[in-house]
Image (cartoon, rainbow, N blue to C red; front, side):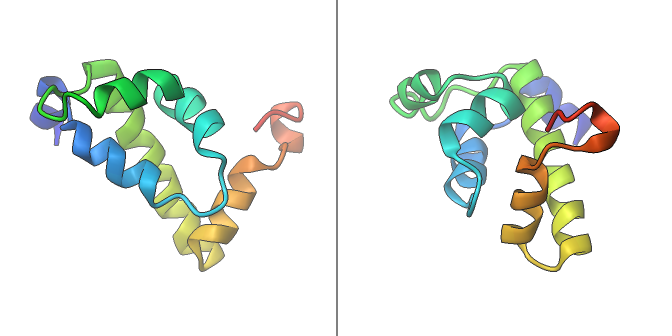
Length: 95
């Protein structure tokens, strides 16, 4: 996985991740979780062979890991996404 992140994830991995979000608004989550604006993501769809940057790859991977762990805990991806969207008391009301 480390080598894959260094080389950059394929854009199709991000398309898959974003395309399977159930609750989270795609435009907000994409920018916050991956560090890429919705417009940039849309432009990248025109060049699917171009890999994500190392930073974008790492952030996408981490977001996917967190979402997977939260899904295991809450029992559904929808519940996990709702939890990710709610302000947390322990984080000074940040999401």
